[in-house]
Image (cartoon, rainbow, N blue to C red; front, side, top):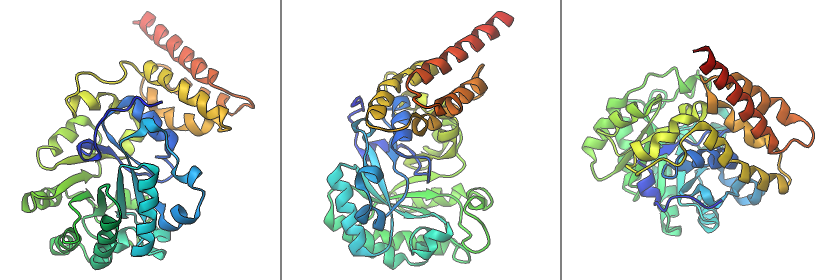
Length: 340
């Protein structure tokens, strides 16, 4: 599969799909690529230690169709960041992104993620070292603040310090992170959104490329944000309701047409990849779990999910599962039409 659009990471950043732990693995990204050729895709966050010492084929492998695709790193040691960034560039990733926004306890104990917002000089050193080591863009994803360091002055100081190291691209989750008192799940919803703070950053620093993230659920909302900032990053909405991505190329990137016309076309487009991965010893459930939301709120949507979750677990299950699920959906759609 190599039918990706010829588009740079910088251009693709107009709309990107967020790095999400346990979700945006290589199979998820290939599925999303069937729906949009232009959006920038991200890996799950990978620690520098995992990149340097782990199974690179398993952790870092990706299909050529995923381009443009960015590698998100978690870490703070400049030497380790450099080594991991060089590995990522060598494997063909189009961008290296440093995570300064994840609030989990495990992340804090390793001195990476949102806790780094309290250490802008540390982030600047890491960014400067990576920029000197690789030719691909080095970017930062952050929050608007953490704990009691959540004033606009704190946020501005972080951005200015990291920008002084040469970082010209920031993806900002427009919520603060409570590292003391809220779970990672609560940190995705409880702290209030403050889009205006991100807008003010862009107005104050027009030289920087600013993308906004957090609570964006529709392309109409994305369009509104794009009147204030350079890019929009979609998270859970893109994963749980993936069909919204099917109009991204035309609506956001002004492409003459979208890659697929129907949800059924999107499912069929995955069959070649599924067969390829099964031949390499993968399990179909590792792929189909990312396709559950394709028929969200459509006739047969519940049955589609049942086939993909239950029948796909049978020993020897293969690509015929997709066709079975599509047949169930087609029957449900025909029944709905007949009833109308």
